Image (cartoon, rainbow, N blue to C red; front, side, top):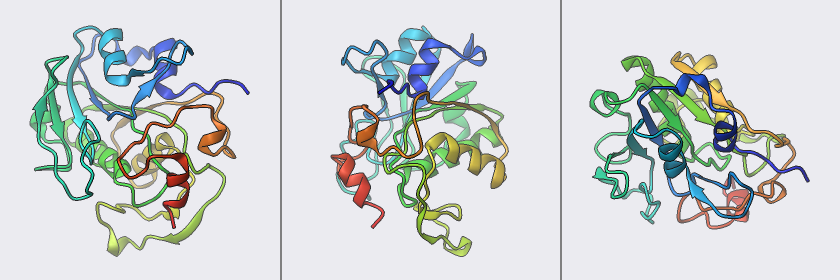
Amino acid sequence: MKRIQTGIEKLLVDPPPILQGKSLGLLANPASVACPDGNGRFQSTRALIANHYPNQLKALLSPQHGVFAEKQANMIPSEDLMDPVLNIPVFSLYGKTRMPTEAMLEPIDILIVDLQDVGTRVYTFIYTMALCLQAARIYNKEVLVLDRPNPVGGNRIEGNCLKPEYASFVGLYPSPMRHGLTIGELARLFNDHFGIGCELHVTPMSGWKREMLFQDTGIAWIPPSPNLPTPTSALVYPG
């Protein structure tokens, strides 16, 4: 099987010109990793971006469960902190606010998003991304989403469709429970079809096919949150 390259791996091989000389922010968590050399040794996207773009990474943002994905319970907020290695601020988007503030985005020109979604409407990471798109439009920032596989496949749509009057942080836009889209495709859907309208860029994957479940990708599963320890967990989650 041809090796799949995720968005972060594609970015490292073919860096987009838009990042040159720009101040960067990164929305990520411990599942945001890559094996750019294909040698089985993982590196965090945070470290890869910091090394590939020296002195350009100015802030990190974290989704639900915290920057270290250590918050077990769903409703436990995370606090802002300083990254102990990079010595840059880490802003929680599951604490005092769920949308980046002007102060959070002030140090950056482009926000990079590298999150592993799980293919289910009620998973909050995709709405953290959507709120980042909204903030980027308001504060005139650009967003670059690094695509990753939908672990429950991209050719099956199942479940009820959210009614707009019930929109919340576990469902901001009308979509079925099992939506069949990658996080890059969702970003375009939210931004274009649902009218957010920020300056959005997506770095696609290579080698991924829509019929693939996660175990077909050859990519190692890193739990995106504590209660989804395996690809099978993601597969049964829509139920």
